[in-house]
Length: 107
Image (tube, rainbow, N blue to C red; front, side):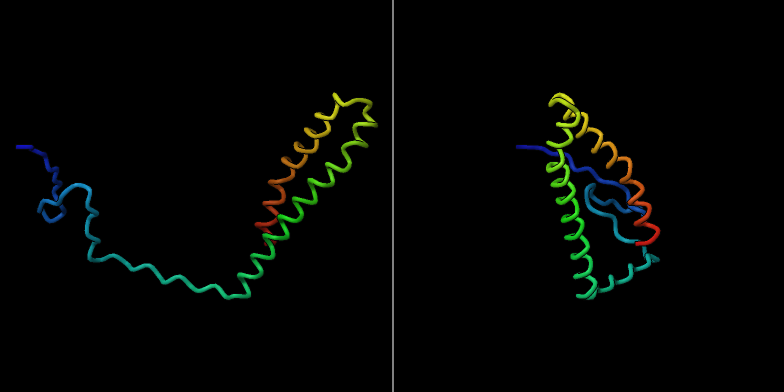
């Protein structure tokens, strides 16, 4: 014969309820408001904004890749190429929180 242990927990009314089951909701619980439906126009605008952001990020990377040979030529050596890429990434990282704050203020 195989034995087992059943864990129980005293409920708020003194009765035992098995552990792992969610407790019943309180009688005075306020129901959550129903989620409002998003209009198709707003969905299109959000999608357009996301696609525009991706386009700008891709263009930004293409500009750096296109300008990199000229930058390396003016720095006189391939060993300085990592400095150019690092400077670009550092500048982008510093400005990113500013873009976020402006988006919060005006978006």
